[in-house]
Image (tube, rainbow, N blue to C red; front, side, top):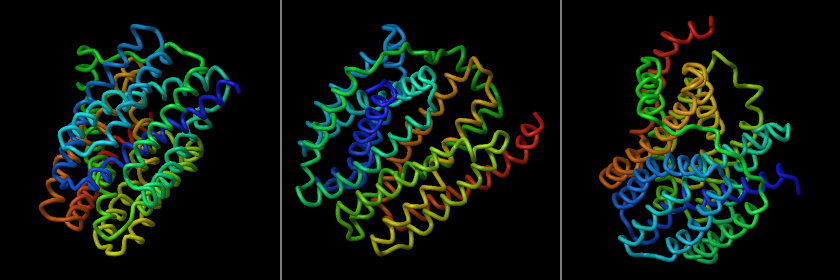
Length: 383
């Protein structure tokens, strides 16, 4: 098997692990009887860890001049911790193992993306042809886990995670290595990067749109269960959401136009509003599951446009810093706010009011995107 196919297989397996962790951890915690506030506390605390762990492991990769060896270390640690996490029930133990998972598993994402990009360039294939397998892995595993937990119990997650983790290690072993090309964040480059007003306003827009997405990511499974849904329905919801991304990512070369990124982000904000507003009024969990098909017009388009816009507005030497800040803002800071504040809001007011709130926040993001498009859109089109 050539290096591109090996990496496609690894993407499938790694994102399968992410599906079991990101999508089903809230469901597992809910099944252990934890209230929404404690679920938010556990996941939000893990988000703090991710903010520091991703740059840390990136620096370690830079120093050791290897991606693969660091990935193997992180995979092995994640496999052990993931098994222990899904075999636990104590709040303190769950909190500890979740923090360790954010320390070991989440930093694998930027390392994998770096390996994807460099391998694609070296083999003369498109990045999308490799990365698409990650979306497939996330979708397929979401469906598999949903049915497995329905028929074998929620604790079957421990064995599933360990099994996929071991296979991931075996696939990672023969992968060709590549040196890390991205630079870690330095205070000097960060000050220059954040000194640009357009950058600051754009990051604020990303934050406003990202928080509702992250709240939905955290509490969708819990909300489905509260409406009377079963674990296999949670798996189907994530299968539809992740599966709808596959074609969008694969065809990004066709629809993603330079100079149109802010208009594209406005387009996604409209569908974010529709998606969450409809979710607030749903009483049938089956309908809520099929609403997740609107993911097609939200996250994959939004995130692709955000990355491209960021690459256009920052100098080339700050791109690595900008991408790291964007990832930390979207997956770290917004995730922390979403978990802590979303957990409190859900516990205090319920799922309907939570989704009405985040639909309102998505609408605010839509209005703000119109403002930024009026100020910066035309100038960028001329340039």
